[in-house]
Length: 100
Image 1 (cartoon, rainbow, N blue to C red):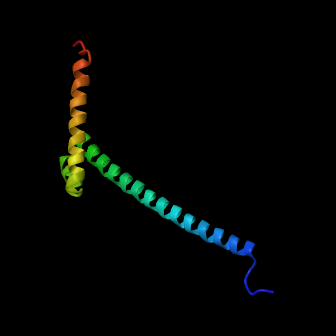
Image 2 (image 1 turned 90 degrees about the vertical axis):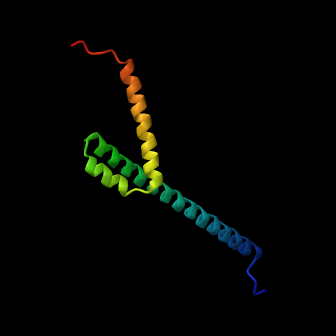
Image 3 (image 1 turned 180 degrees about the vertical axis):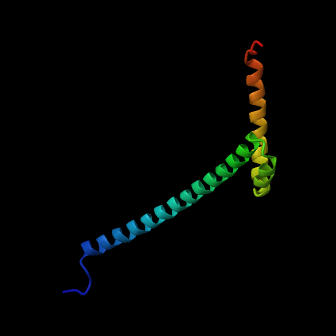
C-alpha cells in the first residue's frame, strides 16, 4: 500500500481547492459591488438632501449640505439643477396658461 491517497481523492482535493478560490474571488467581487452600491446610495441621499433644502427654500441648510460634499459632487448637482431648471422652463412654456 502506498502512503499517497488514491488518484480520485487527489482529484477531489484539486477540485475543492479550485472551487474555494473561485468562491473567494466571487465573494470579493460581490463585496466590491456592494461597496460601490452603498457609495452611490450615499451620494444620492446627499443630493436628495440638497434638493429638499432647495425646494423648501432653506438656503442655510442647502449651503450646509453643499459645503459638506466633495467638489465633484457639487459640480454634478449644479449640472443636474441646470437641467431641471431648463426642462421645467420648457414644460412651463408648453403648458397652457390658467385663465384668470
